[in-house]
Each structure stands twice: as C-alpha cells, then as structure tokens.
Image 1 (cartoon, rainbow, N blue to C red):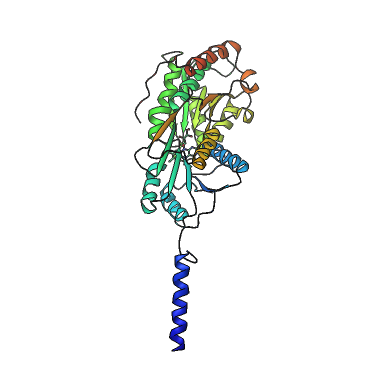
Image 2 (image 1 turned 180 degrees about the vertical axis):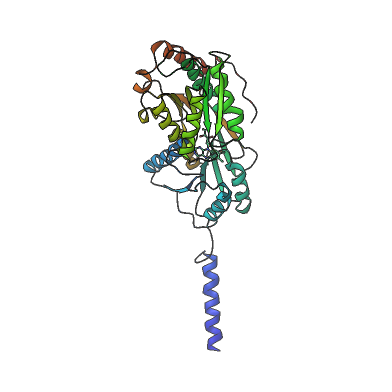
Length: 344
Ligand code: RBF
C-alpha cells in the first residue's frame, strides 16, 4: 500500500520532469547561437579553412551570445558523414558551418536524420534543400586573373622564366569545381596573354603529402613549367620548397602568403571567406539567412580579390607586367572581361 503510494508519487514526479523537459532527451541548445565549425580536413595550411575559422572566431569575439566549436574532421573523406552525424546527434548546435564542394551531399544525408538541423556551406553550390544554404566562390574568375598573371610571367624575361610557353598546376584531387572552373579558368587567363600557352596539370592524390607535391614540381620544372599554381592544402608546401630550390614562380590562390617565399610567390589572390563567414553568422543571428538557395560570389561582388599592395608583388614583378595585370583586374571587377562560366 505504502509502496504503491510511493510508486505513484515517483510516477507523478517523473511525468512532471518529462513535461518540463528535466532529464529528458530534448536538444540542449544554449541561449544564443551555438555553431559547429566543421572542417573537412585540417585547418593549418588550407586557406578556406584558416579563413573560415578566423571569421568565426572574430565574430564570436565580438558577439558574446555566439559560441563556436571547431572540429577538424581529418583527411579520411569516407568517415565524414558518420563523424558529422555523431556531432549533430545531441542537438547542441543551431548551425553547422562548413566549407568544400563535397559537403552538400553529406549534410543532406545527415539532415534527413535531424530535420531541425541547419547547415551553411561555403565553396559549394547546392539548392532546393530547406535545411541547407550554400555560397559558391566564382573560382573561374580567380583562376582567370591568376592565369593571366602566370601568362604574363611565363612569356617575360623575368629571372626564372624560360622560353617554353608552359605553366604548371598541382592539385590534390580532381573534383568538378577544379576540373570545370579552376583549371579551365587558369588556362583561359594565360591564353589571353598568348594562345600558345599550355598547362601541365598533375594530381597529388591527397591534401597532405608535401613530398609528393615536391616531386611532381621537380618533374614539371624539368618538363618546362616555370610558373605554378596549386590547389593542394598543406601539400602545397612541397611545391613552394621545390620552387625555391630550383627557381620557379608561384601564383597562389585564396590567401596572402607572399612572406612564405619572397621572390618565388609573386602573386596572391584572396578569397574573402573570413568576411563571408562573419556575414553569414550575422545573418543567422539576425534570422535573415535564407535556406534552400545557393549564392555565387566573385570579384565583381568583392569576394575574390588580388593582393596588389604587398612588397612580395611590388618588389618582384616588373612594373610593365604589374600595369597590364592591374588593368586586367580592374576590368574584371568592372565586368569588362567577357567569359562564359561553365556549368558545374
Ligand atoms: N582545400 C584545402 O585547402 N584543403 C583541404 O584539405 C581541402 N579538402 C578538400 C576535400 C574535398 C573532397 C574537396 C572537394 C575539396 C577540398 N578542398 C580543400 C578544396 C577547397 O574546397 C577549394 O575548392 C579550393 O581550396 C579552391 O578554393
């Protein structure tokens, strides 16, 4: 009898606890905005990831109601979906913020299991899913102007330039954005200087093997390339070392790294991923972000640029080349350089 009464009281308390969410498995979202910055790789050496983390940290620094957790997923792409599933399962994060073109499919699969989870992905193009918002950098454009600079240099009489009309491109892996925008844009830019220029494209096979990148660069220099670009994350360090040892030039995508190799890295593009990340978090906080759509941002919109005021450019690229390049850049920003953006 007493036991039944105690049992009833316990039952009553348990129901109350459930009703008020005490001890239940409701998502424990904190007040404010809780963001998982999911890095598909490692941060160090990867421009898009370094800039995204910098943007998220600076935004959180000025907005106490925003908390961020940076998670480095590593290089095993086969594990990413399962990892992300485990991370969002407790329901702690209002937002997953991530960056690279392979993430939409992964986020879509994870989102099916957690219909309240929202995802914003930069460097990707995906629309039609109400949980996902994407921003695509127009990398055809950045490659177009870096390719134009590479074309001016390979046809110049600069110290390391040879007579071959050949430039090199080292990439970590092939993916549609690389094959359809980045490499074709680079070649298009170079051929606007001289239509006979060719590009020697080599693939490393991963985003970390600097030794392999160094070996590839060695062979490419032997085969006539004198100006290089790379989309290779941390592995690009191998190209930089070989270019320094052997004497070759590099135009670098996405980030200011002139100081890493003065006189060798002679042109740096800039992906405004830090600014974009801050704007995205501002929109999410204000509730004005739109899901289900994809936005493309490029040089005209102020999200891709070239760092033209650095001694790494001013001191090593001769004035006539800089004059031509700066004019091309200004024309591109003003929409005066016609080109066709290939379908992805
Ligand atoms: N870029 C990096 O800088 N570091 C990386 O680790 C990296 N991993 C990637 C993995 C996949 C599956 C794909 C499709 C792209 C990756 N990228 C990486 C490329 C990056 O998203 C971007 O396209 C390039 O940096 C050009 O802006």
